[in-house]
Image 1 (cartoon, helix red, strand yellow):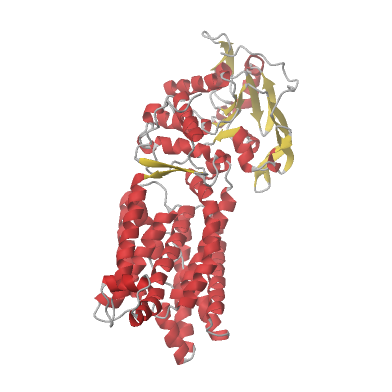
Image 2 (cartoon, chains in turn blue, red):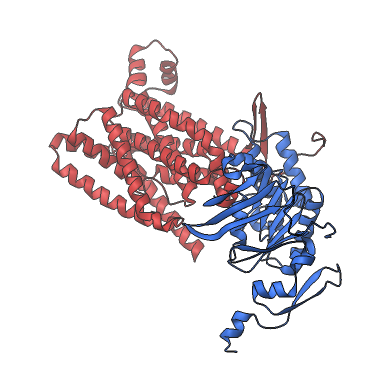
Length: 281
Length: 353
């Protein structure tokens, strides 16, 4: 559980991955302008914010899928756009929202696709590849699903298999875009515990999440965004306050102590501001 | 962590691990078996094709002539008259099939292939224009056909660009362009001199009748670098199956891979068209037949090429020897392919319903 505390707001000195004054967007329409932030090494960082605030865009920028129109994303001291795609993929793995498995592919084959950045033309399946895939399956508890077809799995199983594919990349940085959306609460918790364990084993985990309470419970570093800007960043106890949740989401709420962990727990207490206006109040 | 005492992972099917010097790959056992079977059938058909004709030869006589027998007449018939045509059927069938597999992989649509999209027609248009405006020499015709194919690809890409990612729209636009080009080709044939028109229209159905060793050699020399280049692209191409985001995040470059694959496909189909004309449906059907034979989730370029070689060789045998009249091979592939296209369309409609 979140027992590490990072010094608030002061940029941590150790950050392999950071954004420096980046502007990101599609078709020259910026969603994010001049944003700077840093991912503390070894942290479980969660990016929160309302729909369309630029969370996923930031994650795509941090993972090199989207090139910044201005500013730069720095990975290990170099602009990420200047690194070769395979070089980035050996250090940073991303699970995007739009992952599609080819019809009929089996679990082992899908997870093996994560080995792409480490394979060479004539060396497509070495003992190291097999060992990495086996380890990724073990880490996600999907070893026994290995021979099954991905399209036959349940939603929770399938998501764990995708996580295994990213793990097979053997990267120290793990970026996850809304990894628990569309899953029921038990499967959500199962996945969050998996990410927390991967984090404890030494990986830096960055996730975009919708559920504030999951974010507060599992993250040790939060980045709160609104309208393409970072509104607050730091440990959950400092970022998740009643005023800030109302400011960002327009949702009246009370923040109480989580009866299990003692961390902040957001409880809505009225209609969201926009909804209340629409109702004519 | 030791990897030796771990039990091997079970991927859900049988496979062979090939370790040989710098090579370390895993191959599906079923794919290996299918490839072996196809190679055997192709070899048998080739021997039959080399033996059949007005001067028939028994299989042992064919093999004798192939591997340095002394009968000069046999050797002339087999090596000089029949071998170029048989080899052309194998090589061009493979080229058409590879181009089709590339189009279907990149667009993720089993109906997208260079013949359905009008690229073969476009290559033929380019070639006709070359014949009309310049001369009927093979290198010029190939150049004209490659330019025609690329121009058609550019046109289709331009028209369907705003609907990026909608492969259904791409196909509808392609079918429209194909129809326009087909009528343009007919019009040109009506306008040109009689002997040019006769030569070109036989060739326009897709035929191996006029194939010479020189033209075939030229096609092999032109396509070999493209096929080698394709070998480098294949792993990245396979990664595209997972969607652009996963492909990009795992270190491949989707846009570049896709553009490279399509350019190579247009090049291959144009080269093949310059030699044999727009032979229809090999590109469309071969990759899907190969996928069903292999039972694998991704299209295999190697198996597609083998199925393509088999289809064109078998169609040419039917066109030459089994029918009461000798027809251009394109007529046979159109008939077989038409039936196949209807079957695929029905399957697609059922799946959507």
